[in-house]
Image (cartoon, rainbow, N blue to C red; front, side, top):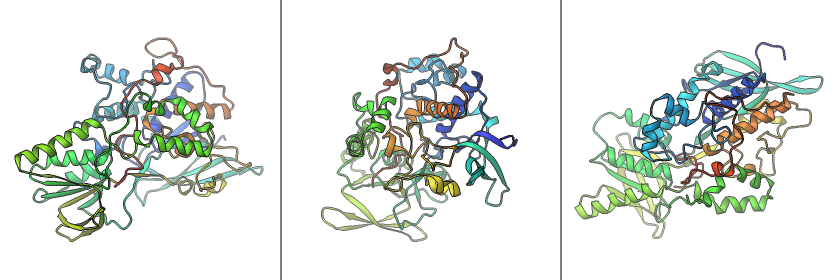
Amino acid sequence: MNDPRSCDVVGIGFGPSNLGLAVALDEHNRGGGRLAGVFFERQEEFTWHRDMLIEGATVQVSFLKDLVTLRRPTSEYSFLAYLHAKERLIDFVNHKNLFPSRIEFNDYLRWVAGHFAHLVDYSCTVVGVRPVRHGGRVEAMDVTVRRGGPQGRLEVRRARNIVLGTGLRPALPPGTPVSARVWHSDELLTRISRLQGPPPRRIVVVGAGQSAAEVVEYAHRTFTDAEVCAVFARYGYSPADDSPFANRVFDPEAVDLHYAAGEDVRRMMSDYHRNTNYSVVDTDLIDELYRRFYQEKVSGRRRLRILNLSRVVEVLDTGDGVRVVVESLPSAELDVLDADLVVLATGYRESDVFGLLGEMGEHCLRDQRGRPRVTRDYRVETADDVECGIYLQGPTEHTHGISSGLLSNIAVRSGEILHSIAVRSGQSPRPAPASRNGSAAQAPTAALAAAGGRRDGAGPWEPGEEA
């Protein structure tokens, strides 16, 4: 592969997962490795869920579970190094909090991303991946990229390995019309900033998970004259299980246990521990919403309505508003709400791996349910004639468990993927180079890997949030 367009690694998407991979790639090359990499990102700049950076919202992971610390605690790309660079380290220590604000953690990620601007092409969309054959073997892949908008020019980069880190996609109830008044919570702050005319009088929020509760709190706090109606099928918001033992499901070793288990045991483990991440809400936020709900009962001015044990059966944009038909599940009675805004906090779905891969997807192996077959090193199993590698940073819960695609495992997961690429490329993995703070770091202890407490899920972007 002497083509100057060729790379050992092409990362598709440049969110936190592939940002972690860029750090691991940098470590490898500073230790004497020779892997060339490039990343393509469709956004114009790095940002992490910009529309859910709500003032006061915190991340659901300990700052120790940043991009690098669980793999290399002395890294210059750790959250602590970021605080030191920003001259806030002492202030953060005095804050006595393991969980930074979401705004600050986004700033940390952007700070790290700034170190790798030379590796990233922004405003680029991958439109296909084609196998490159030599002597009857698929030795590489041609990645076709469109720069700019739909009419942008196409270019091709050749890759020995690709790493998909495209994240999740918003999931909407079938048949729901998206308009200026009806949208997914993933667009919250942008849509709010574009509102024109008088402030909304009634806002309907659909969903029972963390992002739904955050939207309810934000809307109730921001629009002080509006009625906010929370609609969900449960009796009430369910608290996340963030107890220390349950939280161990997010430890790196949990991935090994899940991968080694049979299908029945995997399903059992996932069912047991769904309440650590999916369709659950932090207890502090539940308490705050109930406090407001109760105080409004006391004052007699009720703006927060909880329509529990209910579901939305119809959403109709009338042009000057939205008509929402809500069914009570116990009685089957219908309630019609005339609203100004409807926010659908109805979760996320995994990206279509095979659709993104295009022609190359035909060379990937699938399980009985049509999902990609994935090896322990996050590599998609392929036909025997394929020598190049396709790695996943995301849709691997069916093989690697609930934590495999989450923020909490980025440091370890990225290191494992880079290690696999290095070995398969004939480069013996180098030890971690010395950081600016001292000698090379060793693997973290089990105690450090387990540090953090609290819910260690993906925060407000749960693929399984329920309405």
